[in-house]
Image (tube, rainbow, N blue to C red):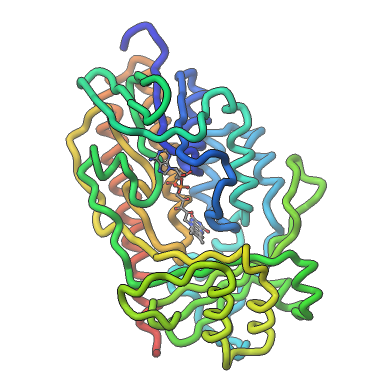
Length: 389
Ligand SMILES: Cc1cc2nc3c(=O)[nH]c(=O)nc-3n(C[C@H](O)[C@H](O)[C@H](O)COP(=O)(O)OP(=O)(O)OC[C@H]3O[C@@H](n4cnc5c(N)ncnc54)[C@H](O)[C@@H]3O)c2cc1C
């Protein structure tokens, strides 16, 4: 390496990109993060995110123990997981994607984090190297450096460019031969209401005290109470009840190829139709959820992680291996990628290997662990959608 600090540019200030930026900054790299959105909270991207033990280890490795302890103090309190049908009768089966971890009792160790609180925490200390509102127009690589040209503003040069720009990554499709993640035919509708709103709507205590996994005719509904410790090391979000409904398109009353209903009022009608014969508590949950807090998205999954010749452009997270939210693995896998890449670049800084070798090792390891996560996610979704209609 030359005598200047290794300069890594990261495209995307999502959870994977920020984790990587933290880890690289701690190693002494020069880090530049370019985020397309105008601000961290420009658009809804989900609310609750479960961080498993692998994700926690990756955070500790990249953020350090003090910042990780602060992050951990902002997690919601753990709740027991219970399975029901839509009449709220207890079931003895669980969300397929979680079943292995449930059997091994590992879900209890998950941190239930608020996504925006987590991103805000991970931005701390990076303020001077994250730029928002950056629209990348083109990239040139001469094999020894990469030049990023933006729609507005000066070009930037770096030693390595990492695409952390999420599902349907512009960078991965243009420069890493990555096919767009496939539409699985499933949809995910999610929303949240404050615990105060839930109580006003008369939602009974059990719904507010346990994580509910509800299975009904090829649909899964997760309801997760998010109650934060106001004495934690970080400002805590208000307490809320999160829910996410996932299932195949036709269960949402949509024909293949039909445009997704948009706008909160339409989504509320969609929920009311789905839940017409469900337990009154569940209908009340949907009815009490503010329309502006709801979002509907197509569930996409990467069929196979692309192969590309190793160079000065690589990627992590959903950019190269998007998976269904039902698996609860996407973010955890992105964090693990960030940890792996940091480990490899540390060796470059220590003079133990070349940048090319480090990237090659990272990409090989990423393909193995993310490939396994993709497979697990696929199996979980297949089992879910194979449930009786
Ligand atoms: C409802 C829901 C619930 C989920 N629950 C879980 C869970 O419990 N556990 C779990 O592990 N995973 C979960 N996931 C999946 C998880 O959210 C993703 O896998 C994770 O966010 C991927 O991180 P990432 O950094 O790769 O991408 P993202 O977090 O999507 O970040 C990508 C960033 O890149 C930016 N960007 C996009 N294009 C560009 C561009 N051209 N230039 C610059 N910036 C760009 C975006 O604005 C965004 O900020 C869930 C997903 C959803 C939708």
